[in-house]
Image 1 (cartoon, rainbow, N blue to C red):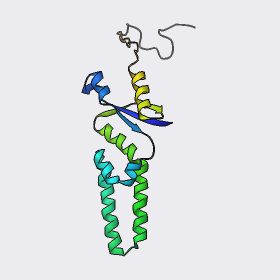
Image 2: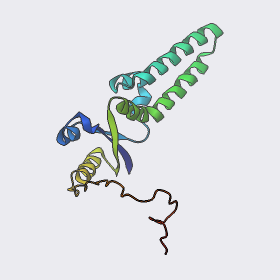
Image 3: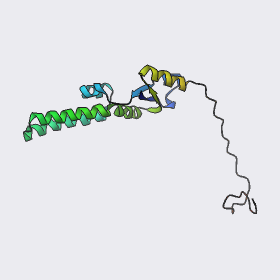
Image 4: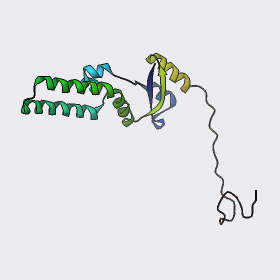
Length: 158
């Protein structure tokens, strides 16, 4: 079973059905597409900050490789390590990018497939919950404010 993080737009952005339509499910774990084509995956999912970091690393690797005369095997190994790193972290970065775009983590669902995760989340989220009762704060009564401790008034005993 896998874990899916469910992101919803903030409550101020619209009505409840609209928020549910825009829900994003992010599976936890290694991302094979991000491993094989990291730059394209980051572009498609609009993870701009890490895209810039990865591109800067690639450019630095090319420049250092040509200036220092590093063997191709070293450059290949560094590129492979970069791909593994992106594959491991890409989905986490996508969740952070969603939070920067105005989404909030609504739930974490355990399921085998995306469809099961959607079913479990929507079943749990749309279940009728009792409406919260409003809490009314009353004004403090005229007590002696010289009392410190657990007793509400002076001279009170257990």
